[in-house]
Image (tube, rainbow, N blue to C red):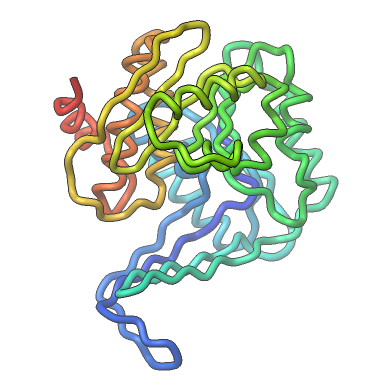
Length: 303
């Protein structure tokens, strides 16, 4: 089973308008309400691909109920820890001549509720996959990733980490099965600007030397590079062709696509890489997250 954890999920209220004027009344020409948060996005895309997963994390209030409803609609199991006060945050994303985001804070998470999540994770068994993705809210200790991975260390669970520099570097000692920085984040981890594929691979291998097993590097319109464990071979592909519509969730979709390809090919890393790249692109080319037909259409472009 694949499990995803989102510590601070959100309802994304997305609006489009021709021009945004501060201090004035602005009227939108498009709006949508989508459950979000990196782990939630991964689970939704897995559901779209026909892959079973369970979404974990914390929710509260009417917005938390809406996230659970959307996950159920996408065919995704959820087993969130329910918080007694507050509501799951709302993020407002304004897409106009300039893009503006207003992100909510999220509800308070007590130590007792944190322990409930730990007890859920203790039930994972060998062969399960756990996706840890996104930021940690200020009501939780910034060591949450480390605490979880230390707790599960040695149980044979594949752990995927998609998080910012500080969180990612601290967990490499627990040998995550897959990490997914983008090329700019990878360079920032080492204080360098990466200018070639060979340099990207070189620094991905530095992360492997620190404990990472497989490294998937997204490069937006330039495609992606994958450096697998235990091999001098690495993979690169340009991105499929298409019109960029919405980059939100594209990285999460790449993770979900990689897991889909890996599971359906019985562990073929090359097929997992191609499926991940096309799934990320399919989300970028769509108003919503990638669907199976969209991904399969793009796979025909990848040789």
